[in-house]
Image (spheres, rainbow, N blue to C red):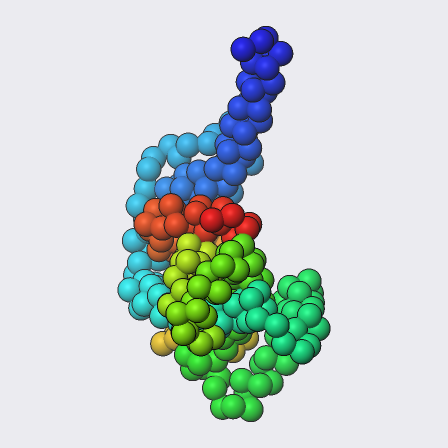
Length: 276
């Protein structure tokens, strides 16, 4: 290996390491602030990073104020509901757009791409009016409503289906399979990695969704973690150790999900680009 190549690779590793540290700094700062006192968390001395005394007061306070078991359950129900709806609808729509030929397909898919290009906040008022007229405010259906279909998932699964060889469908037709059987028994199982990747993305989007739960829900019984954390923020003063402690406790589900499905997540991103 020549010297210039070693220097180039070393520079790449340094940049990647610096980027990793930069992304970890907010998370580390959250952990350190959760163990500080209120006065320590608001002082302006940049050289005092670690707490003078590692306190558990913030964790005990938020655990007494917030029913985390209920919040975890509400968030889990929201995540599972949106993941199931997104994977089902995106799998069928992605197969239709990627493998079937029908009149108006390109125009319909352009509408899907248009929905991906515009900010999601544009749809909040129409979605709220629809949920309100259905009488579904403060219900699980109201929370799940924006995740019943997903433009991003449709695009992701379409790319996965387009990467499969046409010989699979030809072989299925020769064996006597119709469109439904070909989709269900031949094509869909081959996109399992992309489905898992979509499920993880959808779970992440549902977990961090803040605006919609605050708009459509005001009851504690169906409040997810994101909305509960927002209500912990005071109007004129904020207890930063309590906010960071609650945020740290709220991160546990997503960390567990990533640790369990990191291999499928990486495989899904790799295969959705067109190679299997």
